[in-house]
Length: 358
Image (cartoon, rainbow, N blue to C red; front, side, top):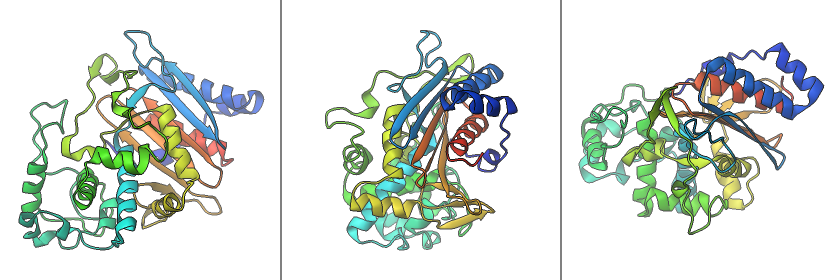
């Protein structure tokens, strides 16, 4: 799951696309844009889902499954990678509010007794896990995959707690992106509630947002895109085991727009409180870039924030963003590894066009 925060600021909108937008309207602009990227990048496929004040539209080029010549549609499932972290941030924040636990409380008392003996972890708060300032490394040092194409598959809770017994913090108080920290946030949500991560997803997101029905799990959808490590080498979907809260979710474009709609316009008092917390700046990273809880922010003078996250697995590169002020959102999927520079640029260019910043 690769994070390339600095790269998506480097945006150049081709003049031909600006002209197309001006002459032919927004839909032709988006389709022409993704077609041009598809031709240039030679990726298997590109999918874009857009929410504009409640109206949904979907765009695709190439194939979700090139071998079967199946195109992306609104129900096609894909790995969202690190965008999962925003789901985990929502769940943990909702639990903390519900249990009246402060996000600045330290986590150590919620971990096994053997881990509590490691006083190096004394400074880690719930908030520091959600804004990547805990000092935990990107990945645990005892993570040694048996199958290189399934790097998380055999990393169990036992291995996680073994690592936490002795680890030290090197960057506490500074922003340092951590899959381990986000995974631990999900583990803490499980330990506080006594429920599994899957059960917590159902309780706090999937069912209240009406992303699924009680008898229909997202992960069971058979309309799956094929991911590729390189253009000609397929990649299996990841089994992320204990670190699933950092990047293990699979969703469709329709489901993601439902999720993003609830970020733009939360409907209940509880969800308004949670989204309000997630989208409030908790740490400034560099000029014009900050993080709330889970969601990152682009901040420009005299302009409304854009909230965003990206994700990457060995088969997919993804990006999503939303603007609460404009009530717009976008989800971008490229079914190939290590194309985040492309998906990030594509998504940010389009959403900035939608809210009139380009």
